[in-house]
Length: 383
Image 1 (tube, rainbow, N blue to C red):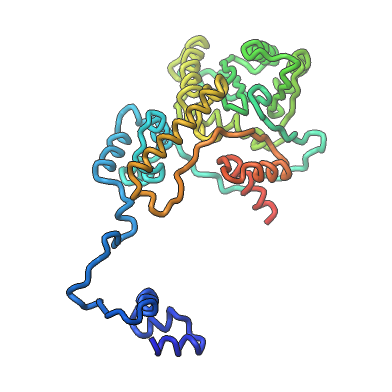
Image 2: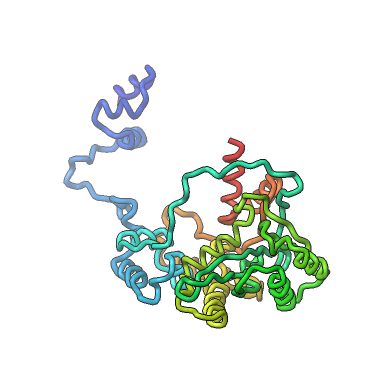
């Protein structure tokens, strides 16, 4: 003790002084706090405290039965097309919690299960272009359903890869629900008018709705017939900047989900009617079975159709997680509280820096995945 004190007084760090004498700084503090105590390091009477854990993770580890349950669920045939998060949240809504989502991901990796459709991000930088001021995107906020829609057209191969058909899809930004979807044989503006007239009637859109629709700069989007229809229904419209596909990221992500997650393919379809039947089934699954990360893993259809049911869903998840903590307190030794599930707030499309900062301040206790991403992107741009 005296040697260590003399060394530290001369400026040597405590840890280095202890290391030079072959003891830990923890042992030094133990001796300092109990100078009259005996050295029990080599005593046969030494006993471990009842609450001591050799490995801090041991008390928090999942049991062999829990691990077996996780692996069985991951290997079930009906889960073969689902992502790990989809499996985890579907069980959570059945009041089943076994470990954390990260634990499931680790065991999935051990089993060699990974998403075969996950593609590497391109390392090439997007081409910079001079964008006319009048063509710039507009920042939009969706505070409720039917306030902001996004739409686009994607090409699919039908009839043994011999025929091109075009998927028209429009999605509500607030809920991420597919409002309308249909395959057509061309991208003519008259078909866009037919598609949106049906969409407006389905969602009961009027001039009082205050709806804005965002799209890219394609021909059907900017055609006079389409614009006239939007004006007829009192709908505002905005467009992406030229050569900037990430100005409309949510609909692009939707197409990726339909094509890759659900494997939407039309090779064996030989008519539009058959293709649309396949599409109807996939769209229903997306709306009412897909746990969307952009809205706190809620279901798009539930969020759009019944906010009360969405709130009950989050309450149920909080209760299930709290029950799990009460049942396994040893797994929360280093955590003050369990994860809190909240209904996702307003959704932003191409927000300004001021909008992102205001949203972060308003939701400082619980940032959504999308809001965290946008805040990080803003910070990188500043850096």
